[in-house]
Image (cartoon, helix red, strand yellow):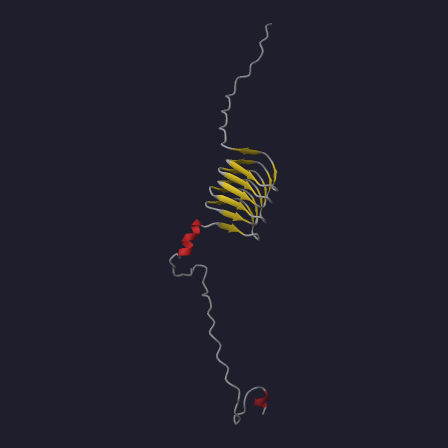
Length: 177
C-alpha cells in the first residue's frame, strides 16, 4: 500500500499508466582545452556568398559606429556614424541616418543628416529632407527643394593649387652712418 501511495505499484497490482517515452539524447558541444581547436569541415562557397561582393552593404538604423569606415563598393547607412567615411564607392545616407565626420567617396546621396565636410569625385545629391552642416567639394551638386545646406560649396573640376612661393630673404633697410 505504501508503494502505491508514493507512485510505485504493489508487487501484486498492475500499473495502468503507459510507459513514458525515453527522452531524446541531447547533443552537446565538444569541450575543448585551451590548446585544442575545433575542426569544422570546409564548405564550398555558395553562389549567394560569391555574389555578395558585388552587392550593397547596409548599416541598419539600430547600428551605431564610432571610428573610421572604409569600404570598396556601395554602402547604405541608416544608423549613426561618428568618424570618417572613406571609399572609392558610392554612399547613401538614409532618412534615419546621422553621420558626424568627414566623408570622402566617389559619390553620395543624402536623405538624412550629415555634420561634416564632404568631398566627392563625381556627384553629391541632397534630397528634400536632407540636412548638411558642412562644406561640399564635388564634381556635380544637386540640391532638392526642402533640403537644408549650411556651408560652402565648390563644384566642378578642382583647380590645381598654386605653387607656394619660395621664402624670400627679408630685406632690411640700410642705414648710412
